[in-house]
Image (cartoon, rainbow, N blue to C red; front, top):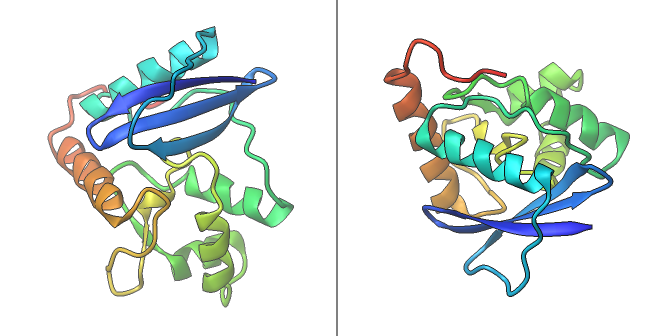
Length: 161
């Protein structure tokens, strides 16, 4: 297992890699004392820098989130939500094939071990309100505003891999 930090406008992101894939992204107020350098962690840092600069709309990194089959299904659908857009928990439940399962998809969303990379911040309440987020509602609002600003002012060819 390898770990590294990435500074972003609201603090630091702790990246964890195992067996050639990213397994976790955590929010941190400060970097830890140890940082590994691997090609994957370097690629992740580069893609996160592009994301925060507004030039990357999708990540092309090997991901290996640990979860149940249902959680993984929800996380796959999360990765289909377009950059700069949001959906409600009810809409997500319908897309997963569980139309009355807004709470179940909300729970799976909350357990996403790779926020930002698997964009769970793009899911909001039915009334448009921001609801829980592992990094806090301030971070969720920041990510949504960042994406919406860059989406509106997009260059002709942002990285959409």
